[in-house]
Length: 331
Image (cartoon, rainbow, N blue to C red; front, side, top):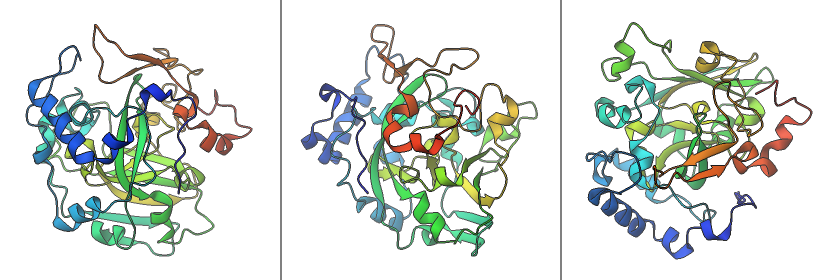
């Protein structure tokens, strides 16, 4: 499937094709900058976040190396690898942006199993390799917009969620898809804390038509490598037109349901984090504006503030999903 580039991206922001296609050379350059330290970015450079730090089973590494990249010729300027892997929200490891990179080494993402449940003809518990068997990986460059008003551009590697769900034959009762994250306190230190904001496990959900949309991705890698632990290894959701908290990490259960599922942030603060969570510059968070975003890397001298786009720049592809809906009510 051809992933169209949003028409409003200026040509000056497009990564040159020669640089983008030679990804390994690009990565070596990015990692070299990380080793030297980037001045003025306002972000700490975790020394242990290196290209060599991400390892996994040989079958997955081989599959990622063979990912189809023909539909990713042009994109926004990519966010450097060290920022993608060193600045995260993954609250199972802590609430600071650098906590996931500090503590996620304890996570053991291989081997991995995912339960498929609910309104499907073929429920069961499946090994990750069986989930991916016979499905070709694709590389897709997507914008990631956090509800906190910062953003990145990331070259993900994964499979279409629609292709995955079709394997299990959703029944007519399926209207939504619910996702659940791993609970393993011995590896995820924040889950040990008795006083916390989130009731574990972390849970998210989509409407079935959103889940089946061609843009919706189940990622197993980024930047041509196996997905780092702090970014949601070994399997995470990526929904590029929604705020980042919808893109749930380290998934252990996928359930198709008839009714709208419980979702963690909506349960905590429904007026702040709606079920749909579509990126919308005209609908502010109650405590801050969503009209602009801070594209990483950024700093005091170069804040890199840009306008937020409706549906994160993917309106041409996804706006029809919400035809007739009041986007202020269904936020």
